[in-house]
Image 1 (cartoon, rainbow, N blue to C red):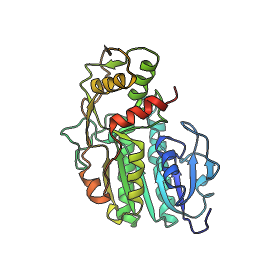
Image 2 (tube, rainbow, N blue to C red):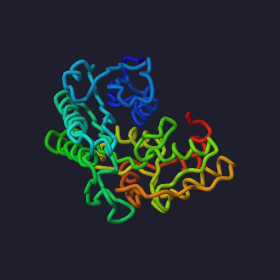
Image 3 (cartoon, rainbow, N blue to C red):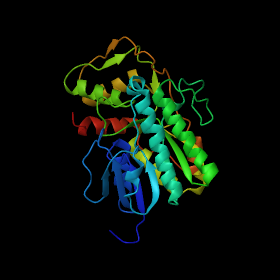
Image 4 (cartoon, helix red, strand yellow):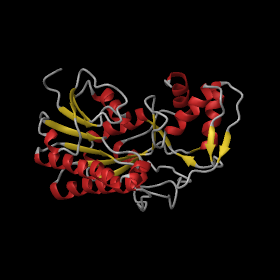
Length: 307
């Protein structure tokens, strides 16, 4: 690697978003990845400085090289698991984030990007959801991500640490699996359709989601890295468009060319009915404009995803 490249730390760099950040930035930066491998999608790349460890352990951070940028993707991401074990959820998402913010403050990190979650909003009171929408999380996960988000913003205010919080909505990619929160429905539908079975829709299928391709998410992250106007603010990252679960199923059936009709079952308890991101602020501050259309992304997933 060229000696003039600056070190960038990606926490959770073996996960869906973190790994794609690595792919996007590896030619411009020296990449360091910190990941405990608990939900890794890939093996550690050979061209990175890799540390297997947990963000809850501050001592691990002391073995890092001179880090200039941090992209914090590591998290406990399951709302269901957060209900089962709220303390662990808080230890990872709150204490882990605080460890990284303290490291960034003490070591004069140039930029800290915190990847939060649309789960911080809770049930939408209006659509599209803007960044000033009330935040009333429905799970310990949503609450822990909101608390971490607020710490990141507070560090920007108190310590002049350049932090930006990005709120991806329903991220999907070739790395997603059946049990992944939010985007798992796409994998489940593809799996059943490829096996010749009809997709199973929970409820009436009229619930809406804002799906965003991971490639668009990492473009937003790269833009936020160098945008000084993004300091100390929260930005929604979505497509700005919605699709019903019924429409999602029909898109995938059409792509498959198979003659299938979805099956409807009971709705899932606690499921958010509607979701759509307002991305006006990200467009204004970052110049962010998602490029991957949902139908194109679904076509790619159907053709390439490994079951």
